Length: 333
Image (cartoon, rainbow, N blue to C red; front, side, top):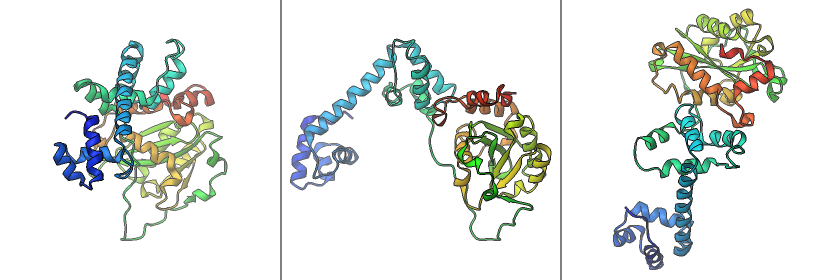
């Protein structure tokens, strides 16, 4: 259906003054109720509705969308940069804009871009496969939260458990790298899992392939991955009180890394890892059977995550920050 015209907006205004309901106005103008409701609410409320201001606002938005498309289409290198990093690297529009402006804008005659312009460009594209692919590539940002069990038997405490409150103070301010947060992402029907580790300072992600959720196996596989790190990056790990970490002493014995445990039902104490798990779910959605995911694919996803520029890292990637702090990036091996 065509956009609402100024004449219709003026009629909406007068009908509102006559106390017509939104449903009656929609019927009179042969528009959907949702369209009329959206039109009125854009102005703030029924009492504040102004047809002239609403029309100007609509034209500004339409002009902005057209400008976004022209700006990007006029620069082939920028267009290819955006499409490549959306489709192949799964970067967000904000990541793309920040890296382009930092590394390429001067070379391209000072042509900068904003993430709002990229979003506008995507949605103003004509219907077709490219539009569908780019919209599909946009990240759905939602908090990852583990289902909490209520009632039932109280959880048994883990033997020789070190509380998060005993953790060195240096962990909190992130000034010293080498402190990790760990977790499991559970697969289809709770029959498979993938271990996740994220370093608090560099946001470097390590994915740990697992054949089972047996505590001994989980601890050995985490230790196997941690052992490959440089010495200065092996300090502590913080985990929740999941029973899969009951054999945490194996990790400490094999790597020297002390394992600390967060309080029950306190995901914010491992916020970096919770956020990272949400990013990982973009590649491995709920229902994934990790027993069927090849090691090569797990490595590919790990590289993609560590190759993304991050706002919290001033738009550098975890790999770049890791390399700057400890030299050669061992996690790429």
